[in-house]
Length: 368
Image (cartoon, rainbow, N blue to C red; front, side):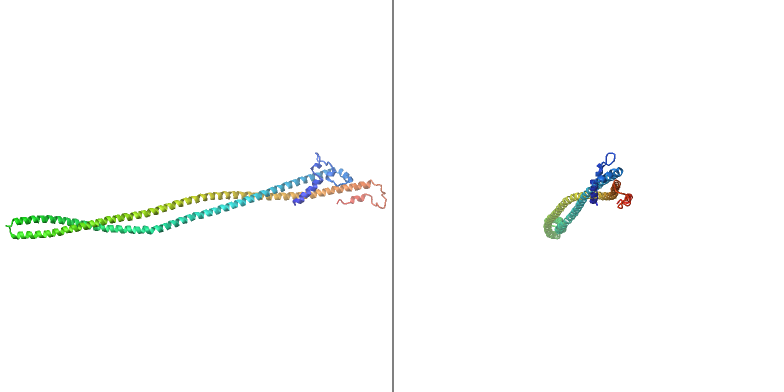
C-alpha cells in the first residue's frame, strides 16, 4: 500500500506541485497541470482559471498528505528500530535475571554443602574421639574407685597401727613396771613366795604379750606404709588419667573450634557472593520491568502510528480518486469546448447532408 501511495504521489508531483500556484493561489501555467495537453486544449484550459486553481490546490494538498504519510512511515520505521532495541534489551535482561537465579541456586547449594560437610566432619571427629574419651573416662573411674578402696584400707591399717602402737606402749610401760615389781619382789624375798611367783608369772606373760604387740605394731606399720605407697601410686595414675582425658578433650575442642572457624569463613565468603548475586538479580529484574513497560508503551504507540498511517493512506486514496475525477472532468470539458469552437469556426454548409443536426448534438457528448 505504501509503494502504491508513493507511486501515485510521484505521478501527481510530476504533473503539478506547490510551485504551480503563484503568491495569490492562481495557476501559473497550464503545462504544469496538463503537460500532455495540445495547444488548443491548453488554450481552452487557460479560460478555466478557477477550475485549474482548485485542481492545483487539491494537488498541493495531496502532496502534503504524501509528505505526512512518508513522515508517519518514517516514524514507524524508526519506532521499529526502537522496538527491536527494546526486545534485544528485554532478552538480555531476561538472560541476566536467569543467570543471576542460576548463580543464587549454585551459591545456595554451596551453602548447604558447607553445612553438610561441617556436620559430617564434626560427626566423624566425635565418632573418632568419643571411644577414646569413653575409654579414658572408664579408666579414670576405675582409678578413682581403686584409689577410694586403697584409701579405706590405708585408713584401716593406720587405725590398726595407731591402736597397736598405743597398746604396745602401754604394755611396755606395764612390762617396765612388772620388771620393777619383780625386782622389788626379789629384793623382798622375805615376803611371801606366792607373791614372788605371781609377779614372775605376770612378768613373763606381760613380756610375751608385749613382744606380740610390738610385732603387731611392726606389721601394721609395714602394711600402712605399703598402702600409703599404693595410695600415692593410685593418685599419680589418677592424675595421669585426668591429664589424658583433658588432653583428648582439649584436642577435640581445638579441632571443633578450627572447623567452626573454617565454616564461618566459607559461609561469609558464600554469603557475600549471595548478597552480590541477589543485588544483581534485583537490579536486572527492576530494569526488566522498566524495559517491559517501555516495550508495552512502544507497542501502543506503534498501534496508534499504524492506525494513523492507515487513516492517512485511506484519506489520500479517496482524495486522489476525487482529484483524478476532477482532472478528467476538466480536460473533457476543455476538449468539448475546443470541439465546439472548431465547429463554429468552420465554413461547412449547414444544409449539407453530412451535417444534419448542426452543432446542437455536441452538447450530448458525454464527459467521460
